[in-house]
Image (cartoon, rainbow, N blue to C red; front, side):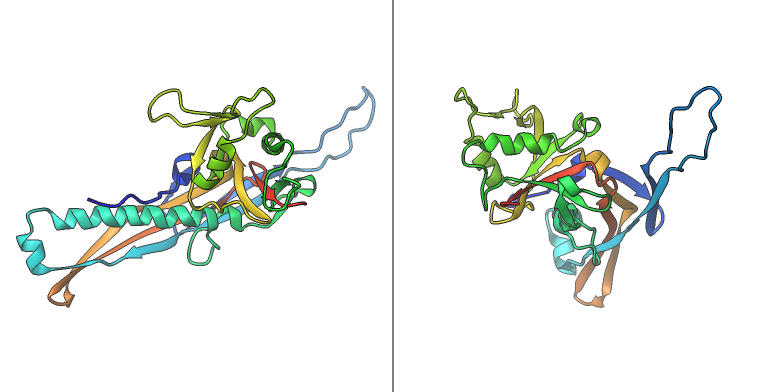
Length: 276
């Protein structure tokens, strides 16, 4: 048996790209061409051209090197090689899931919470916008659901069609207690077993890597993560079986290269549990 671990849902809701190089570079148009209305005989001055930004996503190496004795490998009633491989796969999933949320970009992917955060009213490309609850370390005491509505509509309509909430179970516990003016819970459980719960008609992705509610914490994210966050996988997981370096142990040197970062800074917004 294996104790249950908290695996981030980021890979399920984000964009994923398979690459064959160490760095994936992607041009992105952050503004369209200039246009204007003219009369039939008016002059046509040159208009501005679209502005392109180049986004770079390097792949970082994630590794594990478990060991087993030759005798164990030969005498075990189960396939130890396969068991170790599955354990490493799950450990990789846990490590990269954390990096997609909080990674600092140094030898690991850059998490969406590690980018510069600005008030959504002064948002600009390269930053992540947030809306404040107006209360330090909590929801608005009078109308807590208004904070959630403000976050939803801080995201452009084109991104809301495939949007998700991202939060941990502690924050979900607080939200499940919120009721509307008629006394009904704003939380909606899944319509069938195994279906995702929803909040104001948007699905919830539970990530234990998101912070708990605290003073000035960014504990809730909302947006279209398939447009907003990109995960870059270098093809394949490589396993080197080494029976020579540490006799009588056999080493299983396993590596995977993965990167990640925000690709559309307008697609993800946060709630800040602070006054401003």
